[in-house]
Length: 257
Ligand code: PEP
View 1 (spheres, rainbow, N blue to C red):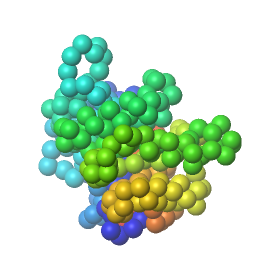
View 2 (cartoon, rainbow, N blue to C red):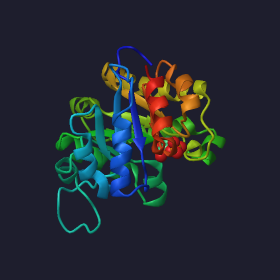
View 3 (tube, helix red, strand yellow):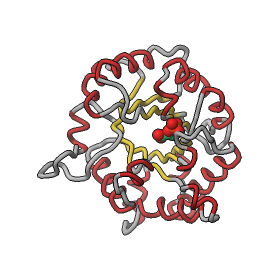
């Protein structure tokens, strides 16, 4: 971590937990003590639990995220939920481009960009996921994939528009082969990927790169969080499976300081 950036610990609950279970889990996360004074905490429950979890988190330090968003505000888009609707439900954040969305639900670099625009338009903070598959890693094209996914977020934008989009944006580097597999990236590999992403943004858009938070995700657990968080360009972690266990998630939060 770098002291100029606030650590961010985010829990992605994926398609787990009923409404009442989500409320109980949210309360347990909010009860975590002690928490570093600068640590930001965010949880992402299923859509059906958002409103109830928002209520449970009122007055706490824990922010609420959606796991996905659609880019239109409203209309004939059966099954989708828009950014203003997420805001109405109490969200301040949304994940975008999670690898499960990209791999299982046809999310593309193009739709990720539209979703970023929609979130920014409505004042929600995006956590935009990037990461290479195992095949891409083995083919030696990890950084080409990261460059493509990152550059696509600002494709077609002028310099000022790009900087506006990147301001407040959180990137999550999530190597696909590490998600839900128990295989975590070596902390040195995570650092290299994070530095690559930050350098790419700095080369193209300047100092906004230094305020941009980059999270690592992929089988983060209480036991490996501290080493990952010790890397200078790792500003936090996005946690899937281990965020469903409040005691383990508390230890991850505490590893941030
Ligand atoms: C995720 O879903 O974003 C994730 C990182 O999952 P896990 O921690 O279970 O690998």
